[in-house]
Each structure stands twice: as structure tokens, then as C-alpha cells.
Image (cartoon, rainbow, N blue to C red; front, side):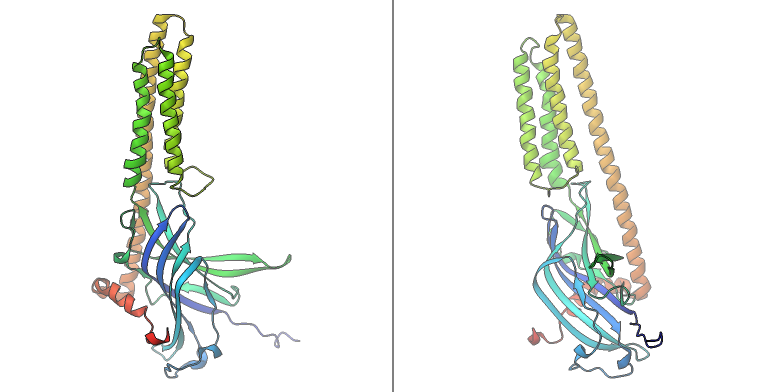
Length: 366
């Protein structure tokens, strides 16, 4: 067989956009969320150029990208329909529209929990390798999100932008061959409202750990009473730690909340240890002086840590929110580039239009 006889499969390009119709039930422990999503993909079919639209066309005769939603766990609705569309110059496009409602997985980054920002993603891939197919974001139609239909507003603040990221994943099928598949990830972002955790966990742990200072009010000649109070506070902190563990998945690193609770527990441990050590000082005057010095030292250490903790938390949150605003600005510029001056008017009608576009033309077929 000569080189001319070899058939080279042409590379297809599939343009895709995603509309987040509804988001709900963002589960931090299970690392998943529920969503109702509309996915529109289109690709060229040159054999149909300059033809006519036909609602009864048999699309199984033509090439198909075999798109897969990679991160879906379960679905309660998965409707797919196709239609033929033409460009300005008669170019034929097969358009596949998909309405999928289900549970999606998401690898949450919880280092800053509960002051974290989380991507919520729809991951698209194909059964075709990258040699045959590339998946890109649609450059003529805007991906979007309907923020007004967000359910978890008490815990999360949903941002109004969608961005995409192209990836490639290699899968080894044999010991000598790796097959690379295209991935396109559509992401929106949710900012956690930290109020619940601040008032119900951080504040309570602050009160529990600060009560360690009250143990210094007990007479030094009664170390057993001091130790009893200190042990009680330490055990209270341990119990509270188990409660907070139920709010998080089993991860191998410490979140910001974990670090704060551990600090409070270590602080209680140090105070307890001091109450045991002070009894070894025989001189009463020296014992009183050292007890005062350590009280002041613990107070300064406690105050400095809290200043440092809140300063770092606020600084990290500030820069991340600033980055989010930058992404929102880029999204608005992209929308204005696509729709021009009509974007502001279009934005007011986008919720209604996207819902209509997500519905099949004939309800009876479903």
C-alpha cells in the first residue's frame, strides 16, 4: 500500500456551549452538586452544504462526535435532539442539543474552607481521540448561567460568568500505546457564605479557648482545680472538633478551619501543661511571678494569632474575589464583542430566552 492509498481521517472541530439552567445542592462532604444543564454542540457537515433544512432527516447517516459528560453520576433527565442549520454562505452545521438534569462530581479545593471559592464544572469529552476530534468553546454563541434559579443562596453566592478550559487526558489501553482524548471543561464559580461557620464554629471555639485564661483565677495552691478546668475545656474542644469533621469530606490536608481549631486545642494544651509545671516551683514568690509572666505571654500569643489568622483569611479572600471580578469583566467584554450594544438589553432577557432554547421543538417525542 502506497502513501497515497493510506486514508487519513480528517480532524473534526466541534463547537460547544453550555447553559447552567439551574444549580442546587452543592454538597461539600460528598463533593458533588445537582444541576440542570443545556449543552449545544455543532459541527460542519460539508456533504449537506447549500441544502435545505429537514426536520425528518436521518442524522445517523452522518459523522457524530460521540460527546460524553464525564463528571455526571446520575441523571433524572437526559434528552437529546438534533437539527440542521446553515451559515450565511450556505455552510451546513449539524446541531446537537442536550438537556441533562442530574448529579455531577466536583473536586473541591478546601484549603481555605470556610472562606473558599469553588468551581462548578461540566466536563465534556469524546470517544474519539484528539487525532480525529477537537472540542472548543463556541465562538458565536455565549455560554451562560441563570443565577436567579440558584437554590443554595443561603450558603453560596453564585457568580454570573462561565469560562472554559481545554484539556487532554491520556489513557493507556495497552502497554505500548497511549490514547489521548480531548476534554473541554465549562466552569462557573460559587463563593461560600462563611457566616454560618464563623458564628457557629469559629466564634464558639474562640470562646472555649479564651476560657483558659479563667483558670489562672484559681488559686495556685489548688492545682488540681486548675487542671480539672483545663482538662474540661480541652475535652470540650476535642468534642467540637468531631462535630466539625462532619462538615467536610475525608481529605488528606488541613483546611483553614481545621488549623484554627487545632490552634485552639494546642493553646488549651499549653495552658494545661503550664498549670502542671508551675507546681514544681517551690518558691512562692517566684511561682507568682512566673504565673503572671506566662499569663501575659499566653494573652499576647493568643491575640497575635487571631490577628494573623483573620488578616491572612481576609487577604486571601480579597485577592481571590479580585480575580473573580477580573473573570467577570472578561466575560462581559466577550459578551459585548458577540452582541455589541444590544448585550445590556439582551442580558435582561437572557433567562427567558435560554429556557426556551433548551426545550425541544416537539414535546411529545419525550
